[in-house]
Image 1: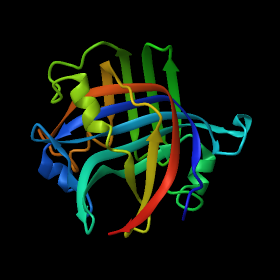
Image 2 (image 1 turned 45 degrees about the horizontal axis):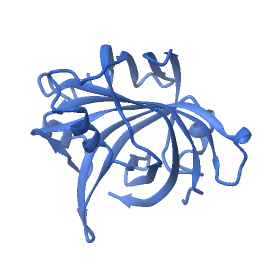
Image 3 (image 1 turned 90 degrees about the horizontal axis):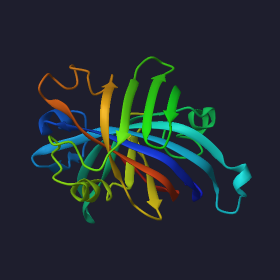
Image 4 (image 1 turned 30 degrees about the vertical axis):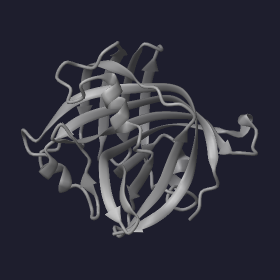
Length: 240
């Protein structure tokens, strides 16, 4: 499966991040992935992204598609014959787009589940709720743009956090087959994040104590990106 290179605008991208005990994170990762550590912690989270004008390069903008999307993910590293790599492992993708649900994993990488999104965004304050149609995952977050990360974050500064997340452009997504991971690369023309003050956050996935026992996970920080031109392209699938 090779996705024709497509491009568009990331109108809004929230990275809601949790610091996780490395052993607890490792149990959620297939081989060959290992948690990418920072200050002794693994990092997982939810990428909540609004895409607009998504289309192949030669198509006019009026034919582009828009959607709200959620990806539960972990920052990971792994080794192969070419050396060490880093990126993200994505156990679950959800989308408001029926096309993404029907074509994901078939016409382009990344199997998606159908979900309902309710979003309010005035440019400074964002409130987002997501509920999957299969009732498996739900997310709620309310946050406002601020100038600094929370005092308890494992990242010492915004630059520190930005440097950690920027290399994670290569993502591998779980598939229903259980033995293959779809690969996709996100390329952005710029990279600029702002910190968020999170007033409330709920995640049915990261609060599941069967996956993450009590004391093994805590909310760390959240970041936002806006109005970023970008491209998506396929990466070679990985077999596990």
